[in-house]
Amino acid sequence: MECMRLVRRFHRKLREMRIFVRAMHSTSHPILAQIVPIRRCNLDCAYCDEYDKTSAPVPLETMLRRIDLLAELGTTIITLSGGEPTLHPDLDALIRHIRHCGAIATLITNGLLLTPDRIRAFNRAGLDYLQISIDNVAPDDVSKKSLRVLDRKLEWLARYAEFGVTINSVLGAGVRNPEDAITVGRRARELGFTSTVGILHGHAGQLQPLTPDQRSVYERFRRLGTALFSFAHFDHFQENIGRGLPNDWHCRAGGRFLYVCEDGLVHYCSQQRGRPGIPLDTYTVDDIRREGARPKGCAPFCTIACVHQTAMLDEFRERPRETLNGILDRRRALDPHFRPPAAVGILSWLFLDRRRRGFFGKLIVSALRLKRS
Ligand code: SF4
Ligand code: SF4
Image (cartoon, rainbow, N blue to C red; front, side, top):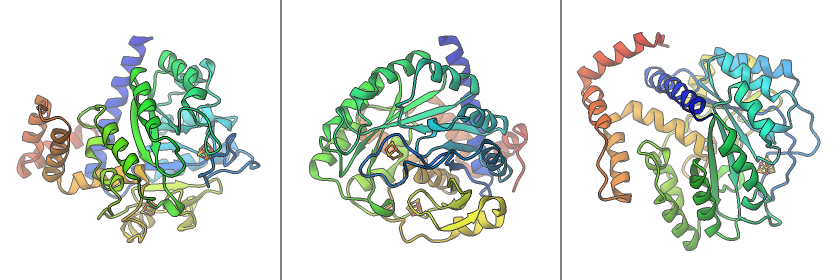
């Protein structure tokens, strides 16, 4: 089991490296698309506007076609979200198809329906990553995505999952006890998972300022310790949001990030549904370029972390030296004794010099057989 886990991890990292190189090489494909196979959810979190209690699963054939269309646009990561995607009867077939198309397959779930058999089925289908958000330690009238409810499922994941697991703690309005985020983060790390902290957004994906207590928990959470290239260190967006400050960035949703709803329409993100609202089967590279370039008034106080992350890759592409220095500075601010690993020195030597970058970049692009677009 442990051996299989290591093999799968190594293979995943190689495929991620290819995604990174591709994102550095071309700006005309979506890095990440979220796709909704079912809008229904088996929970009813008080802050959520992304679910209903009645809708049927999107038929398998329709979903497979949408995954094909995303793959034709060059999408490199496809995330199944919802509603609650584990309510879809053909979820394994969808995951298998995403992998068959060459994309990284990820799943966002509330975790309630996880069992050892379900986890083994995800392994067989080739799931790459699974993410669960846990809102509190004990269930309350706002959310039942609680550590006490889910802890057994987390233990099963630690025992059986061959895919990567991320546990996201949350802070913000609706979370009664901010300390719960630290308890959840500690438990996630104890079980060997990646743990992140997100900030609950208000209407239209916008920031609701954190209280001083919540901000102090946020800062402590960041010090729990993560790998050098975790988005936690890379992520100046979340740092500003944690302080209630606006971010000066260009949101490339509609281009580098797509949200495809259950009706097969492309939207900027889950919180900006209706814009641009173009059917996926007519979405082209021209749409990707135009919508990705369009300024979004909601950007300064946006809390949608997965869109920030795609923007960070573009930031790295456009300003590699400043971005790398920013990562190292943030890491040093958390740990004054931090020394960058040798690999960082080698990569800096290879890619931060313009001429060397051109030479080695071409070599890698040709080794990975990537086309310029
Ligand atoms: S589990 Fe997720 S989709 Fe379902 S109501 Fe809660 S936040 Fe919304
Ligand atoms: S800035 Fe982009 S990701 Fe954020 S809410 Fe607006 S469209 Fe969505």
